Length: 356
Image (cartoon, rainbow, N blue to C red; front, side):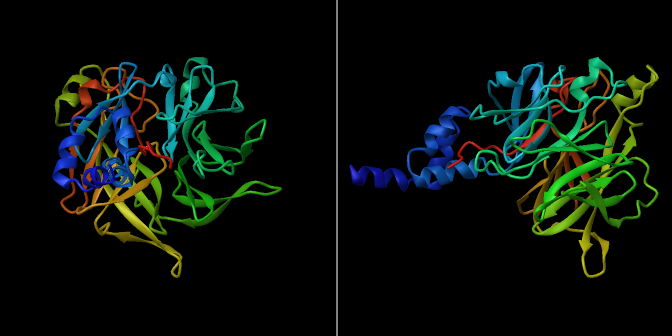
């Protein structure tokens, strides 16, 4: 028996690749990884990079951008819910009744959060769009010592910790575009290009770290990234489309369609106390969108991006997602545009099938 198990453990890489072609997702992957430590390593390698969660009608699907392969999985917990963020394989979801949950889409574990404070002017029909983005400081599967922080009403900031009965609101006077957990603290980047650290204490507040010139870029989305210990500021330049089928059809309806044109990267130099432009990621991938910004190792410098707008056309939905090659500045849309859900944005998430 021991000899047989050894033979199974030492199958060739080509054989493993052939076997995994026939596995259904996620159940067969979980069983495959439970055979032995070697098979678990192979299974984890297949799911080591973030995947894109998107919706065909109300049916969730996963797209592996590295393999260009789509997987379907039943997640009834996402029915009539919008994903407003993802961290460590957990999704932050909200519905039309403002109910907010943390959800692990594979283990089905959930954490119910309190309702966010509500402004009377916010339309009831848009309650599921209340949260602009939310992230978590640590994996709830491994620790109860974590914080959920949410950008809502575009400029308000609030946080919640396990055991809290309500959210705690932090004063702010400018729209916030991104938030991340970095170096044991939350950092945000605002629309005025100020990068601030969230200070918890008697007076919860934002402390300005640095202001970065926005190069007079009006149509820009800003992201903040923990890149191997360095703090990166990423500009996503968005422009009106005027040369394709979208523009032709939407012009007739007096509508505009915007798409991503390029990205700019800046690294924070602590000694100089300024951001310095980067031209390379040194063989890494970034995953940007409504998710907690993530990275992975690869041969090429690529930015994978998802359409993280709050408001989109009901006709074309969330279709501005794809990959950006930093070297040649080319953009390749994901081959999923015709089936993007019109009301649910796509989002990158870790495929955390193996918490052990």
